[in-house]
Length: 175
View (cartoon, rainbow, N blue to C red):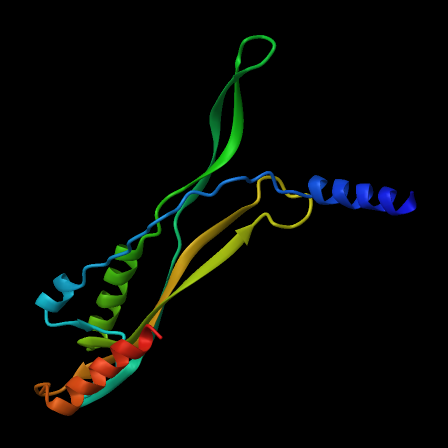
């Protein structure tokens, strides 16, 4: 009898702890950022090392986070006086990645760079009002974009060895 009682209690605890989520739809997200406008200006953004001669300028980074505003959203429900019920919700804009890249480009050009190599993009987050007792907490997601600014010297010659190095870098990233 005790064995059945413990089983029932455990079953109730497991069922009572469920999150309520029963389905998550599939999601395909394609992210693309076109760098050709910078290339047309003679500026290079690349996640790889530069194999030609160059002058070091410096390490650069920028953090891009979206603007967010706490707003009143109509829930579509009505109170007992037939007035619409509003709920406070965060409206979060898109991450300003293009603006961040433009700023990174402008800052690098101002320092005399014509390339940013070892370019990397890392997702970051920051929570606001997360402390206990604070109303309407929100976590904002953004990106930290960083790389090494250089001034390319002379002409970059693509030879068999450098082409193979670039190919190896590309194929090893997916592993």
